[in-house]
Image (cartoon, rainbow, N blue to C red; front, side, top):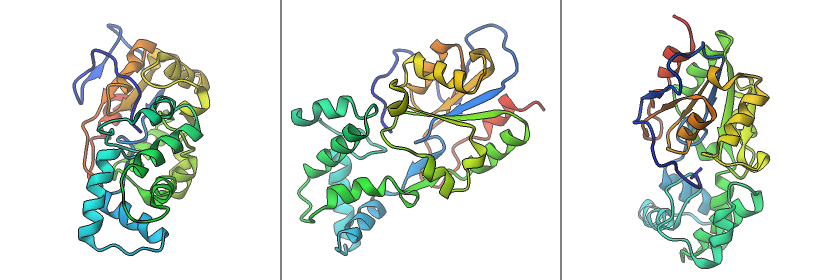
Length: 253
């Protein structure tokens, strides 16, 4: 999900940032969710599925046109909206801290688009709550499996306003994740060092033995907590995004 703030300086994609000259072995890896382990489904498919839930069948041309307008307005999972209407400003600011604010912000943004389909704003939001609305990156499962086999603990650290655990269960990845540290549950959002320190606490790992893996500047906020950081490049839906590089850093050769 889109992060609320960004630090001034961030590592380049694919670069590991090490806060001290020498580091101890990695004992835990924290992963961002959206854009790192999974990506939202293609926008036209998203709109088509949501319209179908409202009893409307869209041809591809209309679905594509609506998707373009809805993406400009703002979609949960990105991209960021082109503007925030004043009436939604408070909900937007709190979207990753409270479930009602997350839902209200994104349904409110979708409702600014005249789609001609009753109930579509809510259906679009609901689509993002189910496993079918997301596509795990193809290298997510192999990477998590290898970390598990090597005895490296895994946490998911996400700025988000709803529970993503059911998605991991549906994808048969739940047994490969030790803990979830979600902004709306802990009251902190990346890049606040507090959310990363909370992750270290729940996984009982020293920050200097933890690696944060993400795709945005907010994920790089883990540096301030004492963790190393790997920032991955953004990849298209269904394409590998370089998660395998984690194994070179966290699993002894």
